Structure formats: C-alpha cells, structure tokens
Amino acid sequence: METPAWKEFIIETAEISRFSGRFFKECFRPRYEISEFLRQCYFVGYKSLALVAITAFIIGLVITIQSRPTLVEFGAEAWLPKMVSLSLIREISPMVTALICAGKVGSGMGAELGSMRVTEQIDAMEVSGTNPFKYLVVTRVFATTLMIPVLAVLADAIALYGAYLGANIRATWSWNLYWNVVFDTLVYGDLVPSILKTFFFGFSIGIIGCYKGFFTSHGTEGVGHAANSSVVISSLIIFLLDLIAVQIIDLMGLT
Image (cartoon, rainbow, N blue to C red; front, top):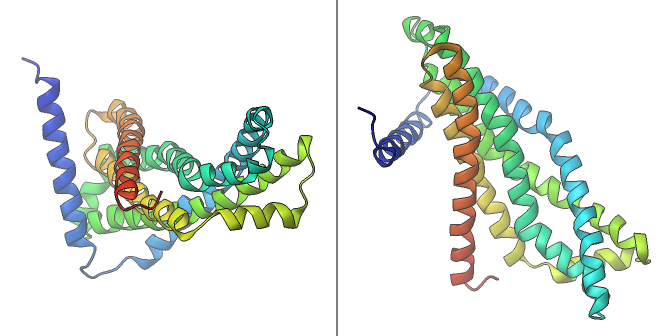
C-alpha cells in the first residue's frame, strides 16, 4: 500500500527539520574544516559567478528595454532608472541569483553526495573515524549561506549596469545622471532586506541539496532523483521564503 502524498510531505518536512537541527548542533563543535569550507566557497561563488553575471546583465538590459515604451506612453520616461533599480534590487536580482544557484549548486550537491552515498564513501568515512556530516554537510551549507548573498550583490551591480545600457538605446542618459538618479532612489530599506533574505535562500539551497544527497538510496537512479528533487524543493522554498520576507517587510513599513 502506497503512503499518501500528504503523509510523505509531513514525514520529509520533519526529516529536513531534524537534519537542519543536526547542522546547527554540529556547526559549533570542533574540529572546523576550514580548508574544505574555503574550497566549497570557491565552487559555490567563483564557479557560479559567470552564469550569474551574464544572467543579471541580460535581465537588467531586457527589463529596461521592455519598460521604456510603457513609461513613454504616460510621459514618465524620466522615471525609468528609478523603477528599474527598485525592481532589480528589491526582488529580481536576489530571486534570479538564488534560483540559478538552486539549479547549479543545489543539484551539484545532491548528485555529489548521492554518488558518495551509493558508492559507500560516506560509510567508509564513518568507519575511519571521520565525521562525514561536518566535513560534507556543514562546510557546504556554510558556503552557500555566505556566497549566495555575495553573488546577489554582484548581480545587483551588473544588472544596474545592464539597465544603464538599455536606457541609452533609445535615449541619452549620461553616466553621472543615471547613477545619481539610481542612488537617490535607493535607501537602506531597499538594500538591507533584499540582502538579508539571500542568506536564508543560501541556507535553504545548501541544506536541501545536502539532505537529498546524504540520504540517497536505490543506486544511480537515486542519484538522479536526488539532484532533481534538490532543485525542485529548494526552488519552491525560495519562493515561499520570498513571500514571507515581502510580508514582513510590508508589516515593518519598509516598502
């Protein structure tokens, strides 16, 4: 008899919560795997930078080009840098960066740890006296939690530059005028919440990818399932976290 879908959802939610609790328990205990943490930061941050940068540039350019005709119709073309900068900083750049990393980093972690599980490398680490959870999971989750905000900030800057080029396709915005308008529009209430929520995005990507890989079963088929489900679940959680963040920001009057 198959387990009902709602029951599987509740069970998996509980397992992920327990897995997260184990992470917080292990992360403050020595020994600290600094070298592995730095290696994961390199893979999560530097290896994802090119993809994030290209995507952010194109998004900034396209949104500006698409928004201009509507603003021109209402005689509000001068508002173009204000509208685009607020849209990019508050919502679009953090979300796109997190979703790209969920697809690239989350799936990679699920597949890598899943392969180690089915080939019994994790079991061998446990037998040899190494703590595989601290070495494999804690370092990766810390890396995603730290590097996703860094990538999001870089994506903000690159997207705004793309928007600058888009604004100059049909009009002429000087470099100084464009950036003065952008920075006069943005306040800390726009920047700080958008950066803070990316820490939660990064943590979710790391914890889901590691959980799915760490408990992979059913051989090579399970590895593929772990990589796929890591992307799907972490993307869904990113959307839910963003919804919660928007509600909190609205209640605090920061919008």
